[in-house]
Image (tube, rainbow, N blue to C red; front, side):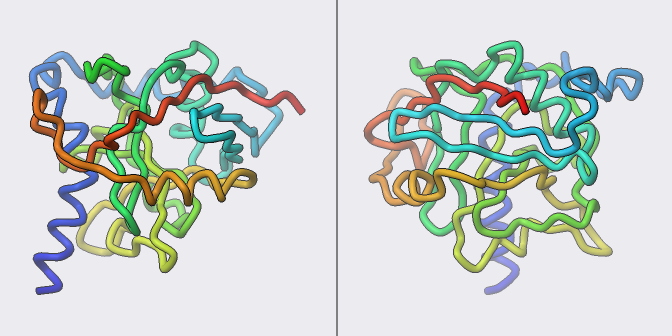
Length: 213
């Protein structure tokens, strides 16, 4: 039973990035480009980002020391307004709140830039942390992220000696109550896309901005 539960938990995170399967052939993991965004507040090891949502504001603090590639990529996407006017398209109570890659009309945003998996950085999928969604291939994260909303943490998403995990790169430092409210919304299946766990009332990520020190 535990094994089936583990597979189900992993599938709920990986499925959303599989929505772009037709585009995967165009994706490349270019190690020469893994420091996109490194020039954004380069002296700040723990930059903060404000997410303005239709349910309230959330502030996250990124950990560049432990997840430099992932944090830099996130900063680049924020700076270039890639997250503005998107939605949180998947919410599973006591598991994850996921977004960053779907427009309000339910079309998938481009995600042709892949980053290396940094899940072995010592940061774990605890309640209130932010991490990268990906497919089963370990180095397939791009732009979609999720918040861990399991009060006991999602330990099954952490790496171990036999498998890669899901990269945690920061945590919520303000607005945790907003995230908790998101985790309680009613969800269903989108009839056109066939996606499960979609909020019945859209939750918008209106804007994401870097907070200057």
